[in-house]
Each structure stands twice: as structure tokens, then as C-alpha cells.
Image (tube, rainbow, N blue to C red; front, side, top):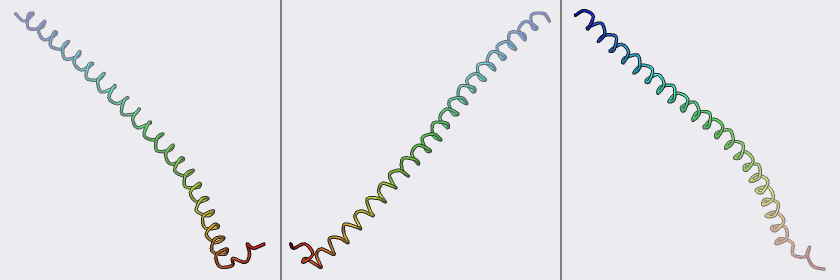
Length: 85
């Protein structure tokens, strides 16, 4: 009888080992996917910051041009004789 119980225990241990490997594999896949997601988010953040910085520079340039045009229009409005020939 002791022998039959030993086989049952061996089968139970085998099932437990198989379940453990399956759990480890699942955790490994989840960990890999989390790392890939994290890498994507870090790259996305860097790319987004770079693009926003570029757009900010362009906006600053446009704002300076607009200010210059406003001064020119103000000058032209204040001195219409400058444009008479």
C-alpha cells in the first residue's frame, strides 16, 4: 500500500512542478510585456518632448515676427507720410 501512495505523491508533485513552470512562464511573459511597454513609453516621452521643443522654437520665432510686424504697423499708422511717394 505504501507504494501506491508514493506513486500518487509523485504524480501530485509532477502536477505541481508542471503548474509551477506554467506560472513562471506566464509571469515571464507578463514581465517582458511590461518591460516592452515601459520602453515604448520612455521612447514616446523622449520623442514627444523633442517634437514639443521644436514646435516651441517655431512658435517663439513666429511670436517675434508678429511683434515686429505689430511695431511696423504701429509705426506706419502713426506716420502715414512715410509711405507717400
